[in-house]
Length: 147
Image (cartoon, rainbow, N blue to C red; front, side):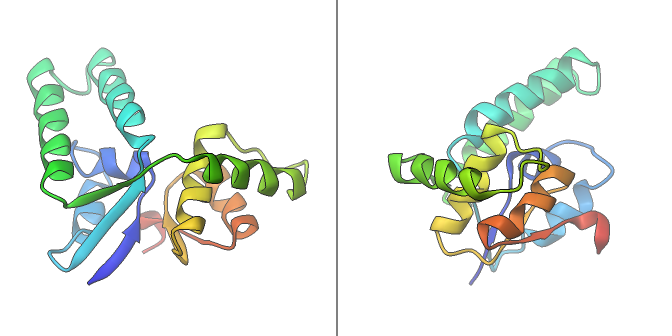
């Protein structure tokens, strides 16, 4: 079975009508196990609410996306990596050694450290800042926009 780490934005794309949704869904085959930080629970909820607020999703579509996402977690199709103290200390250590010209949000750093600590070689994201920071965590940044 193939293991893939998706950031929260990638997970959202799999549940809403985004231009990249089909590409993201194709990555999630029956022989693929998807992983993400437990942080994605909060990020997914906030992203879906934003899409609803911006009228990209109806209330019914937003509720359906949340239900499908939580069902996939319960069914084991998505594995959540707990945010441990070790992961947070990894974030602190990696950020301490990163070039000061790299822009990295705390949530993105948690995703990168989670993927690194769980032994992933790559992380799937469209976030340009995460893609630039990924090598500093020993990861290859991958994007469906480049396949």
